Structures are given as C-alpha cells and as structure tokens.
Image 1 (cartoon, rainbow, N blue to C red):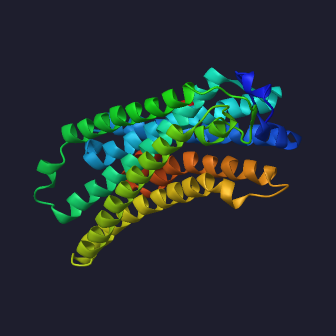
Image 2: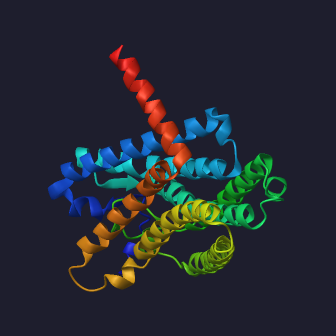
Image 3: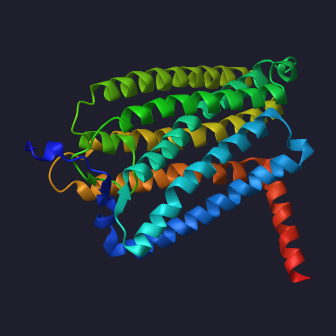
Length: 316
C-alpha cells in the first residue's frame, strides 16, 4: 500500500459479493425474498402462539420464542438489504450502514449461541431434576436469563463495534454480500492488534465455555434418558434431538463461514469466498423456525390449527 493511500479515510465500501453474483442476481433476490417471507412467517407464528396459548407458557417454549425472535433480527438485518441491492444493482454501503449491519448480525450470531446454551441447561434440569425443575426454572427466571443475556451481548458487541469505529480505512472491497467485522478489519489503515486480541480472547472464551456447558448438559441428559421408562425416554430424547439438530446446523455453518478465509486461499477463490457465507448465513438464519415449527409437536399442532382457521375465514 503506497503512502498516499494511507492518508485517505474511506467512508463507503463495495460489497464485491454482490458484483460476483450479479449474473444471477434476480434469482438470488427472489430466493432471498422467499426465505425472508417463510422465515418471518414461521417465526411470527411461533411467537404469536407462544404468547397467546397459556399451555405453552413454560420455560422450554419461552426459550424457543426468544430464539426465533433473535432469528427475526438476523432475518431483518440480512435478507431485505440483500434482495434490494441485487434488484437495484447497488453494490456499495456506507461506513455507518456497514457498522449497523455488522452489529445486528454479530448480535444475532452471539445470542444464538447463548440461547442454545441456556436451552441445553434447561433440558438437563427438566430431565435430571424433574421434581425441582419448576422451582429451579420458573417463567420469571427464564425471562430474567433472557434479558440478562441480551444486555450482556449488547455490551460486548458495542465494545467490538466501538473498537472498529476508531479505525480509518484505506481499502474499499469487502468480499461478501453483507458487511461483517471479519471482512472489514483487514481494510483498516491503522493497527488492528487491539481489535484482533479482543475478538480472539472473547470469542475463544465464550465459544469454548458455551460448548463445554452444552456438551455436558447433552451427555448428562442422554445418560439420564437411558435410565427412564421407554415412553419418557423417547419423549425427552425427541426434544433433545431437536435442540441438537438446530444447534449442529448453527455451529456447522458458523464455523464453516468463519474459517472460509483459510479454506479459500489462492487465486480465483473470490466466488467461493462469497458463495460460502451467502449459503451458510442463509441456512443458519432460516433453519431454526422451520426445525422447531415442524419437530415440536405442540407448536406444530397449534400452527396447523391457526392456519386452518385462516383458510376457513378466507373461504367464508
């Protein structure tokens, strides 16, 4: 980088990913709108049903509701802008817009991990301590945990965003279809050691800590299930498998997207570097409402009942 470029502070960036897929941009835009609509509909139905059905006012369903509300945030911060940019042919984003989108997506991704951790612990308490469960995990406790996680995550992501905001940028090309911290930092003119250290230490501690809690809770729950009666065991394992499926999809896509730079080095890897986060992020954001809406019996039945009522009203 020459010395003159170091004196230029960039305030607008180019999302190279949008340029890379412009040849089939309309198809991607339609898919983005379709996934946005389906995910938003399923998430809204789950939230509405959990809110209105008193029989679902239990910790497990409250956590599922919080999870899909978080999905709605990720959904809103990702799909609409992607579709609008593809349809309009716009491939630029301002620094303010970039930081806002990065904040929302980072908040969504981190919150997802924290919620999965609390859900794993909740299922362990339900199976391992059934007599004390309703004392240990009340609805009020569930709401307090959810609020505490939200505040904790906001503080951590705000610190990260503030560290990024202090940087000046010389590069303009972001190899992605959306703005994220990992793609933005390499474009900085000044030193990013503090940013990298904060990200590395914080991410390592939180991810390892959450993974250890989740693994312990899952293993302990499975061991306890094997000692239960066949009917109770199958019911508990079905719920556990739903959580494990959703969590596995989340972690798989998260790790794959974050490690894409080391996986796609070399010439001619730009398209791959764009397609991986495009597909991975889409799967991660869309999967949870569909998984819980289909595999959770109470939610599935209530959703089907509400859809039937809507159809009957339209026919009248």
